[in-house]
Structure formats: C-alpha cells, structure tokens
Image 1 (tube, rainbow, N blue to C red):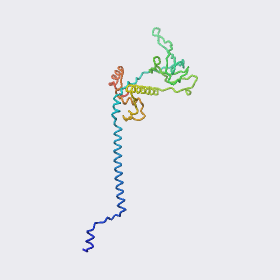
Image 2 (cartoon, rainbow, N blue to C red):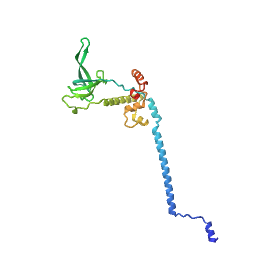
Image 3 (cartoon, rainbow, N blue to C red):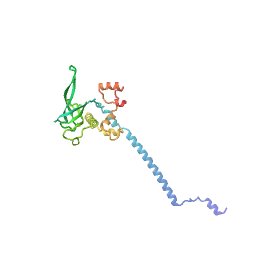
Image 4 (cartoon, rainbow, N blue to C red):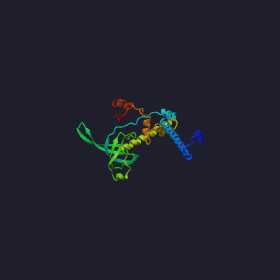
Length: 250
C-alpha cells in the first residue's frame, strides 16, 4: 500500500454533510424537543385544572355542610271556576269576583240559583270591572285570598291587547320558586352570619350555567329536603319512599 494511502486510512473520517446541513438538522431537533416539552406541560396543566375544577375545596365543603335543608314547596290541588269581576281598585292586585251557580236543595228536590263572591289575585292588574274570567283555587296569597286569575274569557271595555298580560301557571310557579330561593338565601345568610353565594357553590359542584337558584338549592340538598308529616305519609303510600316525589317515581 502506498504511504499516502496509509496516512489517509489513519485520519478520521470526514462528514459528507456541509456545515449548513448540520446546523439545520440541529435546529430542527431543538424545535421538535421544545414542541414536545410544551405539549407535555400543557397537557399536565389541563389535567391539573380539570382535577381542581372537579374537586370541591374544603371551605366550600364546610359551607355546604353548614347549610340547612329547606322545606319543599307545597303543591296545591285546584279547581277552575268562571265568574264576573265585580269591583276593581279597592285592593292592591286583588279583585272581587262574583260566581253565579246553582245549588241542590235536597228537601225540596230542585236547584236554586246562588251567587258566591271570591277575592281573586290579579298579579299584574290586568282585570277591569265587568270582565268574565276563569280563575282557579289552590293559590293562597293571604288569609282571605285563595284564588288566582287564569285567563280572561270576555273582556269589558278595554281590549286584552291594551292590558298587561295575565301570568300563566308556569310563570307563576317560576315566580314562586324565585321568591322561595331568595327567602332561603336570606335565612341562611342571617343564620350563618355571612352571605351565601349560590353561583359559587354551583360552580364548585359543576352545575350547568343558567340553572335557576331554586334548582341549585334542590341539587345541593337532593333527597334531604324537609317534608311535612302528612306529605311524608302520602309519599310513602304512593311512591314507597318519603324522599321520592311522584314525578320521580314515574
């Protein structure tokens, strides 16, 4: 072997790649490593955030334990009646309605006409004197007011379009639940000595946004609401469980 060949064989092998190619490969490797580390840190951060949001803090748990379970809203049976508005404006959001009907006299054996007057709740002052309306019982507002307006059958003098709309049964129930929730928050805030924040509790329990305050309270105290003795007996006989409502049983 020639001497120059021996010298070349003992020398280190030179890289075929140019310095520019080597720098480019090094840059690509560093970028891929940084991207991989960033994605790993982001995934770990998301996992920590989800765990933190799904878990309730000890202070919130203590606040939930201190809250007392409310009493369930009572549902009333009702009957529909038809009558004529007799007087308006003497009481706030209340009118006097006269119902003309017949009663059976068992001694004589015939029907006799009779007039009965009721005080009917008119939440939006939609009624006028002379209106023929349909009203329902089972909505106690005070000691003497136990009826509420359902709809106007025949308006008198003023068209229905020019009056405030009559509340439907669903709207009245929503208003009733709203007042019930406000009363519960006031009572618990006064009892605990600090403001009760239902939205914060709902967020800690992962309750959907837009849920009403009444529904939040029901979900916080699910199955622990206070029930009266009579209603408890009725639920036990109808559904088999005092904490289960007839709607849940179906």
